[in-house]
Amino acid sequence: MGPVPRTLELFYDVLSPYSWLAFEVLCRYKNIWNISLQLQPTLIGGILRESGNQPPAMLPHKAVYLRSDLRLLSQHHQVPIHFPKDFFSVILKKGSLTAMRFLTAVKMEHPELLEKVSRELWMRVWSRDEDITEPPSILAAAEKAGMSMEQAQELLEWVSTPQVKNQLKETTEAACKYGAFGLPVTVAHLQDETHMLFGSDRLELLAHLLGTSDNGTSYRGEKWMGPVPPAVNAKL
Image 1 (spheres, rainbow, N blue to C red):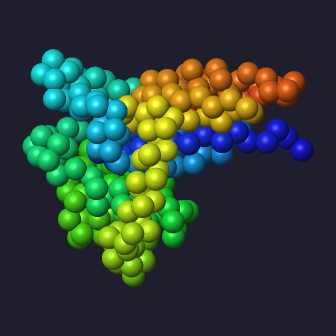
Image 2 (image 1 turned 135 degrees about the vertical axis):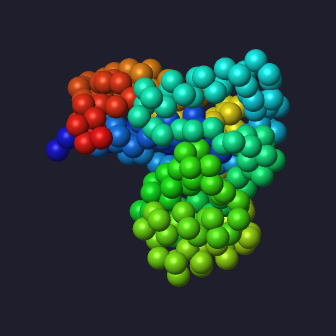
């Protein structure tokens, strides 16, 4: 019997393109590394309010750098990121509250579809410049991800319930308790230690943490092979 998988939590919001990068890389590695990946839909607006932080695009120099940075990272990670034409309206005004509540409902009722629905929402807002705030848009994303229209309608009706609202709030508060000041945040639970890593550029450090020995158990497979490991690259 092999070593028990270590638990990784990924706190993310589909409004965050850097969350998409971390999401795709961890999804690629989840069958290579000995990990149990727990996806945690989180509201980035709540994280920013709690921490006193602000979106990087609010600072002019960072906004300019953001475009260049994401263009290069998109190529390097092989994730099709394209800036929305009306960035400030789409990202800063419309937000992602309904979309993240919908993903919270997906996790609660159909967790096996969470990865695909999350990816499709990212594809809409960050690749095809499509809406993720209106009910028809969310339904279209869910259906494209493989959910039946009946299932999607039921979940969409559920997003305004206290159960879903409270769960998203609790997940966001949990990220804050780990020390989050933005997203993505990856939390690695390793024996008696918990490590919080911010951003999509700390995954090489995550591999280092996962590759250390726990109680004499050697985890040899947790090597960093870049954002697109060879086994995945052959399929792309």
